[in-house]
Image (tube, rainbow, N blue to C red; front, side):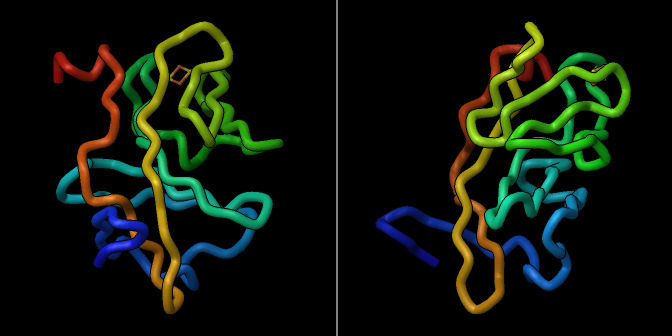
Length: 118
Ligand code: FES
């Protein structure tokens, strides 16, 4: 589907992700994603914490638009993907909701430099 001239593809039903929850979604195209329902909106990020390349961010603690990695407590902005504690950033994706389906932008996300080795 297209929204605002950009391609999107279906990721999951929003009924799978109640407010205040996060899910790990294994996406064929992008790998492990974290999908957050936080403060009335959704956020889609890589689930991989760049610190030790662990697929854990959906299990992190979320507060005020920031996810805290459960392993060593690095903090990432859900909006921009910026690491707020001095490490590498995470990938973030645009989304669109229509008919209770959460769609993810269907184009390569901006990839942090550290991921180009994988
Ligand atoms: S693996 Fe996330 S902070 Fe260490």
